[in-house]
Image (cartoon, rainbow over all chains, first blue to last red; front, side):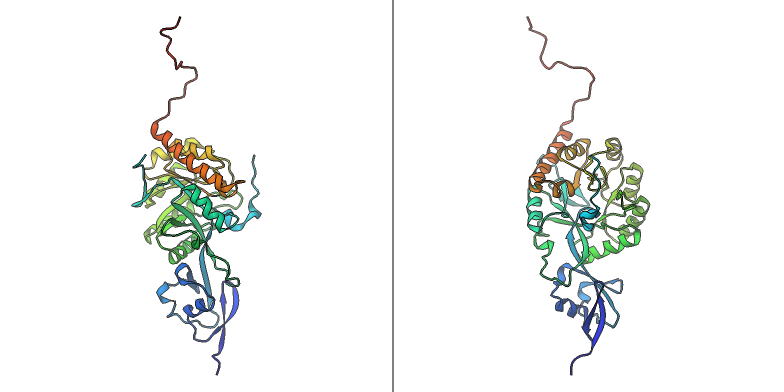
Length: 87
Length: 257
């Protein structure tokens, strides 16, 4: 029998997930290397060593974050805000 | 200047140029520009991983955290709560307690909200973070940040990404004289002379992103900035001559016909 699927939210998007799966399982399924990410489960930041011990429940909200290029805030929002030209 | 090391919270840095990693064409260009800049410290932002397109490469595949000190920032945070959340996420994702703390007050100027900054800094220092705060060129706020426990202060030269250069050299100079921790001039540098001027004023380091990444040739500009920061530091250590209104002859009058 197939394991029942549950609905969770990952980085703002709805996603099916196997019932009983852990955060570690989710990361492996998404092919995300754990050593460079931070994971927030329902606003709680998880310790990396707990990824395999925290199981997901229906409606859980998971945020997976990592480092991207950035210096100041304008870099993050892209060229759209790059409108200050005083010269 | 063999032993002219910059030390922040017990960490030693050879280069006095800190660089951001945003706005580059791709990671290959980012890597080349950072190598050309000679920087030891590179800033990064914390954002959601792209889960739909896992082919996207990771910035840290290009920047070896063993070679560079990765300084995560709280860019884009407009209140204390968000800044704390991003700082904690950065620590969870990263390798150290270092955080470049930004709490912004306004989208148009991106000026720091110094009230929020002080509040967030206080909490993060208590949580064991090494907080490097991005602040205004306000000497009183700079001193308060030091009192809270920030091991360096990062006042702006001009609005982020503006390229306007150093708008208030006198305030920066007062901060440098008043505050007894390293001062890193952050944001607003447009070209090499701006960086040199910051260092000549007595800054301990300069942080920039757009001035390099936005240049026509970012790699060449990165190299220019390396020399500018180095030259400015040398000139500061050498001690410039005082400004005088009238001429002073360099050649002796004696022995003239």
